[in-house]
Length: 256
Image (cartoon, rainbow, N blue to C red; front, side, top):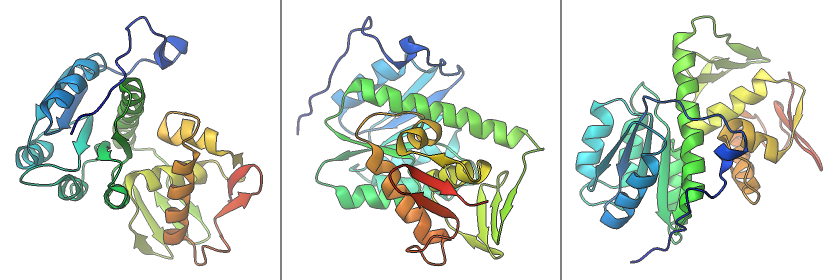
């Protein structure tokens, strides 16, 4: 199967040229992709964002490296020999340390994408994709990794409590009436952002900027799908939300 990529000129304006903060250095990205041409292309462009890009072409080796070393982000193809991407994602999320995961999928694997997000992947891209979009997504993941490291180092991080809902920031854990609720990494980030900003209304573009780290037009459905899954998990009745209300025609608001 062949894929077409948009190879952009280095003089072409990017998000970084428009005032975006640069990604922090000393970062390591693991790319688990069995198609050699795609993997090499990713390495070329991702090397401009971080200090080290490690390529792996089968799932077994990729899983071992993912679990044995510390990574700033992992780019994970779902269709891999030996161990598939869904199992790798599940095993990574079984570890205590957080690492952002970007999945690469084919257009025909919508169910796999949903399963990957449920297992804890932070984001996904469908093939074919533009390299410019990929780098924008990876920059957002690297910023999120830097932020997560700050969470671990800051012992004064405040836990949030609202009417039976506990958001334990340092543990990245959520409880409803004392019972732990399993959330994906992105669902936790979304809930934490809302709970940190009670009674404020945010539209979908603002949520993309604040939680995902990018605000591309046309990706508002990403917010919708995550919001639906989050409500299913934390709301007593998702049809009549107690915590996150819909402000019709605008966006969403967390009731503090």
